[in-house]
Image (cartoon, rainbow, N blue to C red):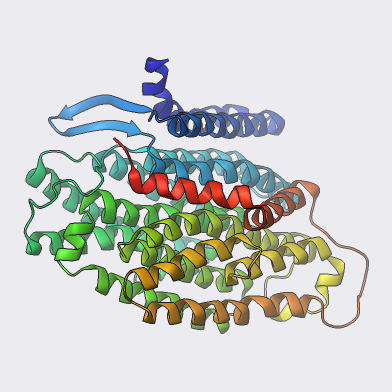
Length: 489
């Protein structure tokens, strides 16, 4: 059992990569290709579930695979932080796989084998990021995710898709170079890159060094996290198929960026170093500005996926803001919002894709009366929209409640105003989509997407209600947040 516990995180990471290698051999047999996808998704989910069970019993899975040099090794460790991210991505991969199959078949999408193989690589990279035991391992899988996402962004092969792909690579590779440089510098300074609660070398680095490391790492993580002004690639990348948009916004890519901030603040530099260098306030200001500015921009977007993209930019900075406040309530709120936003935002993107597949509409101004013909889709969209706005009874309220508590705990009540204003803006740019759908008389028969797309939409929307309404589920999330604070070695 001890040997299995040491190798379980590596096995979880390898499962999607194994699927990516097998899928091309099933290119002429779609059913087999899809079976491989679901098998790998299920294997990852079961392994993450087992590691969570072990964590609750006080045992952390993980171990070193091999060392390249002293303090520089490829190693995995399933701590509470990583398992939160891994649980979210592995669960949503199952739903996304079903949705992607329905989407690809409905639109007769080309190069489906390549699509599913690369999608699996992205999920394997996300698992590697989540379960990385040190910064070296984190950076390897972070860059694999960067490169693997590119074929998905340009999948349609149009001129716009290729331009979007170049913009994405320009931002992501530049950020990756800075992240790699900061990693090498840290290794030179500390001799060990293993993630530790409180930082790699608490008290050993001077303020100037901490500040420069923070700047480099912030840019490295800030591009994927969509922090303004590093966000420009994200709305452009909406040219990609909707399942890719869901991957970008909810399952892997942008969540890897904000997860990097959680590691940066609590495991690389450490809260004490951040506080001593006075870095938390500038980061909080940047996050607050991103939350409000992106919400205002979202109000003006007629293209549905672009409106949702700017919503993502806003909500990612909720997570960064929670971590930046350096108080327990902020940490819990950040972790909860990482999970809650993933559920709610993937619901919204799934609905956008369903609308496009069933009605070939992709703009808000085209949706008048469509809700009467697609009641399930628009009902699920309403749940996602209200959840992101923080309406009580839905899961988004829980994380916003903890974030609001954190503003008082951190002695920064002005941030409470940011959260409240952002909630109002959420309603202003999301709710009109629902009201337009149900405006005017019903015209035509019921028009819903295929069941392979509709079922994931309903299941995830229902899950967001359960997480927000059932007390045991709330308690479980809160307990997991406290466990993440402890992060026992």
